Image (cartoon, rainbow, N blue to C red; front, side, top):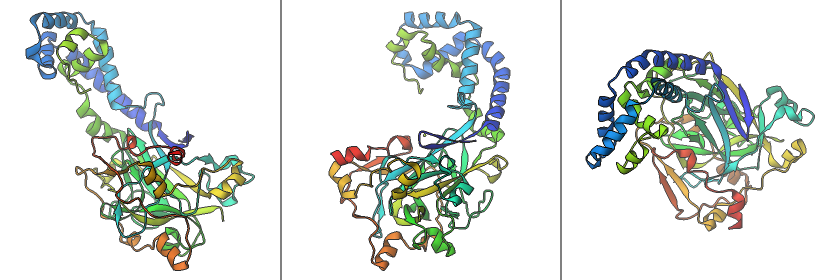
Length: 435
């Protein structure tokens, strides 16, 4: 199922949720009797030594905590254990009872086409999304035939795509039915040689077409028919435009066996730290012992802009772990911002700010890099695509007012220990303009 919520596309699948929930219930049923039969004193001693500064704990404090653990009703331990198992197996999924991921399209600065590899530009909020079917009397017929959603963009405005998922998904991204990872025409299913999809949650975002190892060319909107889109340069035709997204969830059995099972508590010792904290057992003792528990025309297509440093990761799994029998896909129409009002009756977003305006505000660019995952080499076909800037220069046109990038920008370095989606959303563009 695909839903539009707060300008984000939400893809959900109930089948993996039900399977993982059943597997988690089976695990809890088999493991709980073993946990309840354990010696509580021994489990507490092991837990206490591993998670506290044991040498700083008085005998009185130890005895107080030991008595409270001894008096824990079995049903309370059972309830917490089951809750812990299901919360670990399907985080953030219980309210909707499905495996979910979301996609948002972020407004951003356009990086220059100067041959340099630039850092990740910031985000200035989401592009507004609207259902195409809600405007059947005004939207182009070809859009209605494809369905999906639409968003407004100014000519030569840039965007990046943000992903959020707590369950593993394989995601295909294309523009004008040209795959943004391989540069090949759209194909059904998933392929490995070369890999034509992204892997979530490892891949936090995508800023452009993958043209090299650690390098993408920025997504830049251009009207169909100008010859600037990747689709037109690849096929010689301006027929499709927009952005195409297709998602495939991981097979539930593989997910549970390889990503959930190693995280589940197997003994009372492993269960106690979080249980003591949540149930506030021995709260004062824990505080005194320095607790240290370790408790994501109007139609437009995408052209290629300047280069951005961005890793696109190889799939660390076998291809057969993805459930290609379960899939959803959505067409995202790119609507010229000046036509948006005619179709929707609402104002488009303000024009994109320039890099100089952003530099004046003193805000940063971002550097996100991780060395624990292999990256894709990039597409030779996409590397040959002419950029929007090069085409505009050849035609003697200037698509936007400024392409200059801030000199010596402030850079925020973000490693894999930081959740990426928490660092790139810096400030609304309105606030930048007021600065």
